[in-house]
Image 1 (cartoon, rainbow, N blue to C red):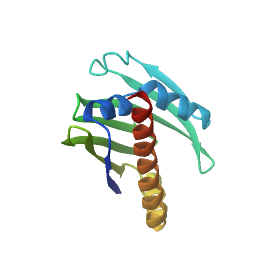
Image 2 (image 1 turned 180 degrees about the horizontal axis):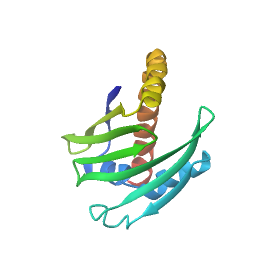
Image 3 (image 1 turned 135 degrees about the vertical axis):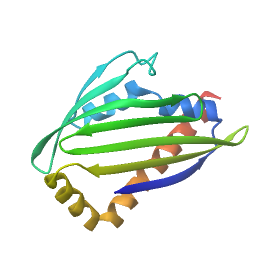
Length: 155
C-alpha cells in the first residue's frame, strides 16, 4: 500500500528540515495519543543507529513496531524503516528548495505485509483508501502550515 503527497511551503529548506527532524516533538505528540515510545540512540547523531520501539493499540490489538532512521541527508532527505507485527514500512520525506524562501516537501509511505494477518489488515485498509489518502494529505498540509507559522513568528 502506497501513500504520497506533495506540499509547497513558504519556509527555507533548512527551517523545514529542522522541523521534520524534531524527533522529540514527534515523540511527545505520539505519547499524547497513547503510544508508548522508547527511543534508543542520540537524536543529535541520528545516523549512528537512532531507533524507536513503539507500542500502540490498533483495532483492538497491541502492535509493536521498531522504527529505524534509514537515511539522514541534511537538508534534503529523512527516511525511516519500520518493522513489526508481520508488516514492514518505509517513510521518506524529501525536500527540494524552490527558492530561498520556498520549499517543496514530498512525503511517501509504503506498507508491505509479511504475514497473512498483515495482508488481511492491509486489504481492509485498502477498502478505505480514499478516506486514508484524504487524512494523510490533510495531516501533511497541517504540518506544513504549522511550520510556516512557527517560522514566520521567529523571523
